[in-house]
Length: 297
Figure 1 (cartoon, rainbow, N blue to C red):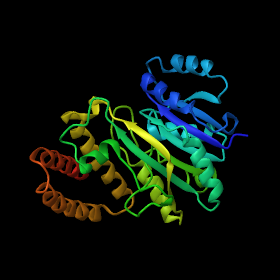
Figure 2: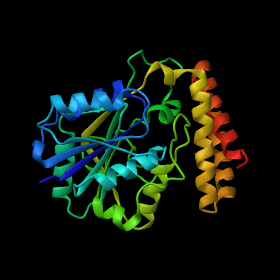
Figure 3: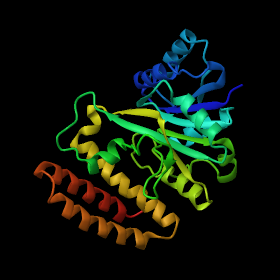
């Protein structure tokens, strides 16, 4: 019986998709207890053919691909959830790899904690081209979203949520609160996000506690293309844009501006403690987020 469904949305990243699938078929959980649903979100490369070849070579696993014609990460993830069959749903991304005990860890957690509804695991950034010297913990977060709350199961602090590439929920959560808001999230190459923050905000507002599962480990692979000045500028702007969208959706735009002003004060103070290069990139990030937050709809 399928107990857990892994959902992977992909768009024009066939090579990266195969890398995460290699870690998927290395799972130590019994193959009959889980499935992997890959959602092809209108890829124009050889994603479909390469997946078919991979699945044929690993026929002992429950691997399948579905297509979502509506462009966007939220659309794709929602399609994967709708097509899946497990009572537990884990969402991962195509730019990562997971540890061999990933599926087992989430199944064991939800079995041991029958009242738990939503969880997330450890996220470890991986830099194949090397970690740049300008990267500080502050500027790393929007790029790689590292997450390590220790080695024991615990509740997420109010300031953090599970990463979108390492989260798991019970299916009844989607039935109760809905899935990802399709007006939010990345579409093609546009870096606007916010769908995960929105999803977990709805859960918390409904009284759902979010749990950290340290044995579910994901390595977020950051290519050199995501470490350029141009990418960081666009990413920072779109972080602010997604914050603006969500703030206006919930009628708290004025509060968001006040919070941003406070973050400027904190950033300026923190910049004094960093190397000049790290300080510069921190202030670039803050400026980009502010521009996105102040932009017109």
